[in-house]
Image (tube, rainbow, N blue to C red; front, side):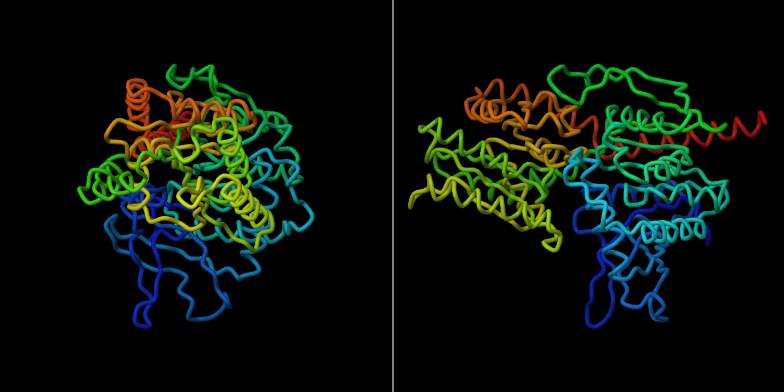
Amino acid sequence: MSSDLVIVYHRQPYEEIEENGKTVFRENKSPNGIVPTLKSFFGTAEHASWIAWKLAEDPAHPDFEKVVEISDAHGDYTVSRLPLTKEQVSSFYHVSSKEAFWPILHSFKEKFNYDPVDWPTFREVNWAFAEAAAREAGPGARVWIHDYNLWLVPGYLRQLRSDVTISFFHHTPFPAADMFNVLPWRREIIKSLLDCDIVGFHIPRYASNFVSVVRSLFDVEVIERAAVEPELISDGTALSERSAPTLLSFEGRQITVSSASVGVSVAFIEERATDPQVQKDAKDIRAALGDCRLILSVGRTDYTKGGVDQLESFERVLTDNPDLRGKVKLMHVSVSADRNMSAYARTQTGIEETAGRINGRFGTLQWQPIALISRAIPFDDLIKYYLAADVAWITPLVDGMNLVCKEYVAARTDGDGVLVLSEFAGAAVELNSAVITNPFSHRSMDQAIVQALEMPEEERRERMQELRRMVGKYSVAAWGESQGRAFADAIARKQTAETEA
């Protein structure tokens, strides 16, 4: 059956496990996150499809199920699975996407690695995604493509299907032209994105950067700009914009440029945070700390997250404020990434060595300043620590959005707690009532954490009230609604153009 909605994303929309020798598809354990949000769009379609890849030792093996039919809480839908070999996954995802694109998107030019990129394989994989989408899409279908590792899919899909409405959403930052144009394949990538009807970004700055890249490479006209909402403008954050482009004209077509940030499922997090057992466990954590205050930092092991910089700031704070020794503890959760990738392995080693040095320098038999955790924490357990923490310290060097800080705010149903947030996280545009800090400045980082620890209760609650209002307003549901409106507007615009023609 053809679909009127096709979602193209590298991950499968379920957990695939083996039970008693049989393959079982299970709903994702947590309804919080991007996959459940995308699946919620299935309710807007008569029939929907999801395109993803799956590792296959032999893609031609007759037992490989390329198409599976799923029935879950979101309805009945088709999953078209592309069989990729280990070599293809390594080339397309770990090398091209992570070693070439990722550092440029995050403005780490010095980490860009061009030499090992196998561009023909990247094209081949993107073509496979486009072919699958073209097969599944019914006449005039909506096709929603996600993230930079599928940059070439829109262009290929447009060649195959001129009738579909294509939207592409970036879940990363998007840099300005002088950074993006380091990529040798820039024209091919941008031309593909210009074959979309909608190109979406988290915040206006990334949309503006995208247009700066587009105009450096092609003759494109900006035909509409819009003022940014006043509550998203702050002189204290580096990523604020006062206006942003919203509509482009290129080769007789119009392309919407959307700015809408992904949020969190506030209702779900609040439900977990108010669970009596979760609250009891959070109180037990607090009681075990005694009069020691808890700072919580949660992120992935990635050089963009600034883990070592944060630990070094904590070391300076303990050096300069001896009265804090024995009175504050940092729980630093840095979920280890793929150690087969040398950049991540070096980052993990740096974090472990720095934390060890600080504990060795300041620790006593009764008190260790840092609890370093390098594994993923179950979400319910994480909620307990959100509730127990006096401060959430989220200071990436660069981050497209950052949902951990939004989870912390959503969990604080008690109205207390302090968020210290990097001004280079996309979330800072909305959450400018946090203690905003510059992770590239030692003084700014050190002062921010001391300010957070010393903040009076009245100020903590005033800031948290505003933070909770913003997280509630820009929830993941609100993001989904904005993307639905963008699709509807683009379809109406195309229909008008066809009528006038």
